[in-house]
Amino acid sequence: QVQLQESGPGLVKPSQTLSLTCTVSGGSISSGDYYWSWIRQPPGKGLEWIGYIYYSGSTYYNPSLKSQVTISVDTSKNQFSLKLISVTAADTAVYFCARATLNAARFDYWGQGTLVTVSS
Amino acid sequence: DIQMTQSPSTLSASVGDRVTITCRASQSVSSWLAWYQQKPGKAPNLLIYDVSSLKSGVPSRFSGSGSGTEFTLTISSLQPDDFATYYCQQYYTYPWTFGQGTKVEIK
Image 1 (cartoon, rainbow over the protein chains, first blue to last red):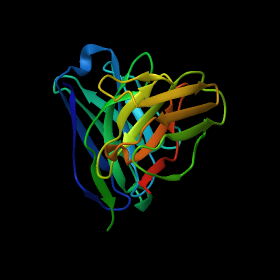
Image 2 (cartoon, rainbow over the protein chains, first blue to last red):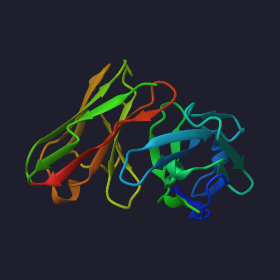
Image 3 (cartoon, each protein chain N blue to C red):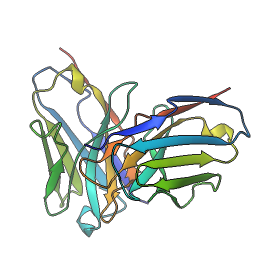
């Protein structure tokens, strides 16, 4: 059973960088069959896909966030990470990591989510 | 971006009711559509993919239909565990986008 777990600071100051890591267990990121994604959900609102990384390091970012986002992968640790620069209060959200199948990108496994608050 | 619009935003229903949620896409997404259920404080859970394929373990009272730009999620007989928020998601083209959600409440 694949499990994903987000980790990182729960509070980030405005203009600083949000950094989160997703650790995958029960399966290998390097299997090549999946995209590894970040999705966020502001409090009381809907879901926004941030982007994905493939085990090879290739990425795709939502154009709405492209200037702020970097997603990286560490296959040796079976982890992938999110960096969001120059954050504002609008970036306050629950951040989820999730797995999407390669041939049809529905999200079949999700982490539990971690709330990141942007505040001074 | 493809905009996904769900209706209604909130739905009040009773246990045993047949419930239908609609998802409309701003352009065709072919059959690349999924439905998720989310309960408060939890991650979304995939219910249906490719419009009508039920994820393993999901009760058969859930079903999906549609094509192109209009899709529906039907719960044939609402159970207490089904009170939650439901989201559709297109994966036809980048960026992958979600509907705004439909909250199913107890009547």
